Image (cartoon, rainbow over the protein chains, first blue to last red):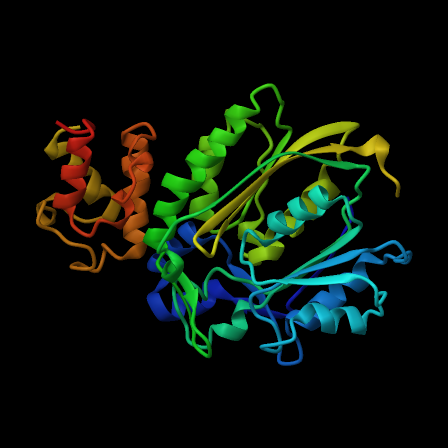
Length: 303
Length: 79
């Protein structure tokens, strides 16, 4: 599994900003819950499209003749329409006979796109890119302290990856709990999101893991919502896997690009062995969750 | 957990004196019980109830100690 990545080039020292606004003691308490001390956001020349182009360039993939589909995931496209996918395809000279699908998906976006890609058995490019800083013009303690801007590009190797199981869901009437109205700022009700994680995401994930009790889960990759949520899930899931990595403190939350960036960083430190089962757990905007169990068989790689 | 222990847990979570805590206390009524304080309360309750309180739907949305106490009591997690 090889990912191309790109992150916003403007570095925000959240610790310093918060210390000025709330004092050192409250800042410590806040960062203990949120996680990142620094965030990476777009400068004025960057946006979701330029970040995704950069991620694609970093993937350094040359043979694109057999690509059939492009899944392009973002909630902050550069135009209302067409979706970024078409701009991305043109800019990067993708074949004109591919299917371009734009997803308006948040933190579940990568799992949504990957499960569709593996189920369809089509050669796919998955791009996840997000720039919440573009929709967060005023300082908001819940939002401004959490989200970084970033992108990832990935071509699932259909011989190497096998979709074992998946589960999806959303909670009715929770769409305003994490929302951005047109030309407005992002709003998040942290209490309600936590309630969703503890009473919907966690039990639903356990249900899927128990359903597949014969499988050894070598790694669980959970969406890096916040340090508080990550710690909560790491603690609850430690009986199911002894490898549940986190990068929230180092990088912040990249929304749909979070999971690919997390996996990419993890496999650089701990490459996949012969054969492993991984669990992907995305959750957030909707409020919704998307899970997948994927068998990674390195020996079958076509790379 | 009895009511005294519950109030003690809240005072520790919010970092305030026990005499400032009563079941009448509401979210955002004091500076310490803001959204960060709220997460600390939920996390402490989860530890104290061995993971059971986090499974209660809607508990995280409650905005008064009385309501939180009543829900925990209804679930048999407090006496």
